[in-house]
Image (cartoon, rainbow, N blue to C red; front, side, top):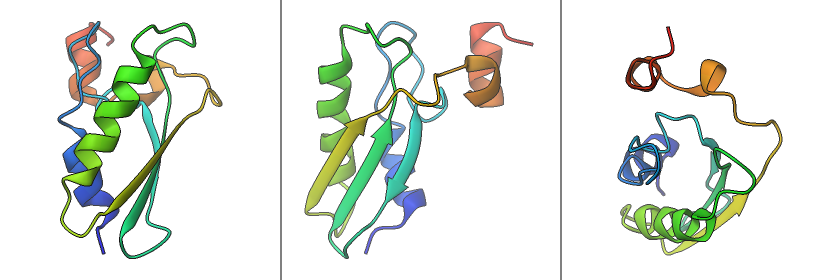
Length: 101
C-alpha cells in the first residue's frame, strides 16, 4: 500500500507549465487518499478555472502517481473549492520563487 507521502513525492515531478513550479509546492494538490491497497485518489485544483492545461496536468498526475510501488489504479479529480490562493497554499520555497513575501 502506497503512503500519502510517497504519492506526494511522485507528484512533485508534475509542474505547472505556466509557472514552472511543481504542483505540490504550489499547493494545488488538496488531497491524496488510498481507498484500497492498490489505488490512489488525488484531488487537485488549477491556478485558474479557465486554465487550458488542466487535462494535461490531470494526465501527468495519473502517470506520476502510477509510478509509486503498489499503485495499480489512479483516480484524479479537479476541484475548485476552496479557490487556490498562492499566499496561503504555496510552500515557502514556491512563495519565494513567486515573489510572495
